Length: 167
Ligand code: DHK
Image 1 (cartoon, rainbow, N blue to C red):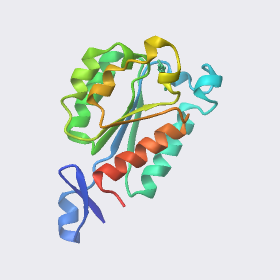
Image 2 (spheres, protein in one colour):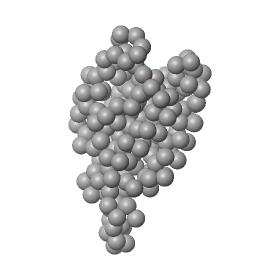
Image 3 (cartoon, protein in one colour):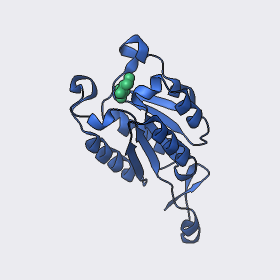
Image 4 (cartoon, rainbow, N blue to C red):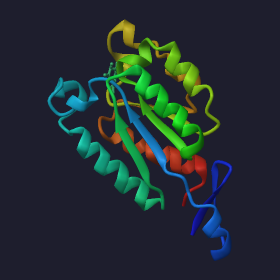
């Protein structure tokens, strides 16, 4: 059985297991990603956000982890969820979508975290319009996965699991 100590996972005895269960990976998606599958599918792919959720859950389960998977179109809601992750998550995967390019408030919230933060993009913003090439969120990210469509989320889960020491 895996448990957390700080942000890392350890195998442990049954007694210890009761007191320290593994926290989930929180996966946050920003504005317009609720439209995934129909929104510019040539850029963002045909998978829906529910498909992405299923893929994340499966990836995490294979590493003995669970996910809390959420999407919002509202900056303040995303910030509230980032703050929640401070105590409730072992790692955070975030696709900030358009807010990544604009939100210093989201960056400030992310900078309060003491857990791995994986920034995730379906497309490769560096290969798109100039205004997408700068992402405030990157300043607080442990690492970035971009350009692999829905698989970017799965790779981000893998990276998070590795960083917290899951098998
Ligand atoms: C999603 C968005 O909605 C855009 O605003 C970003 C990102 C790119 C993505 O590739 O997932 O520029």
